[in-house]
Length: 58
Image (spheres, rainbow, N blue to C red):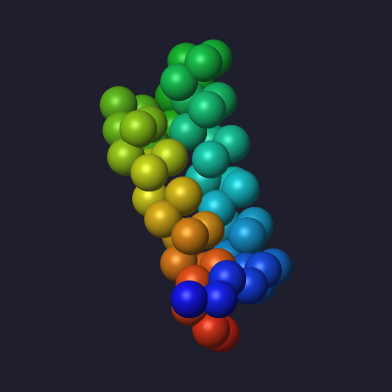
């Protein structure tokens, strides 16, 4: 299996979700969809990044 760099859209989506999850958890920000589910949002963000590195065209 050959890994490649993810596309900019995939990378930015992963970064944005990661930052939102961390801000919600650390600073207690009230983001409606993310509050209470920070670990799941962080896990989804990292899966998006991994799939972006594995799959072609993402």
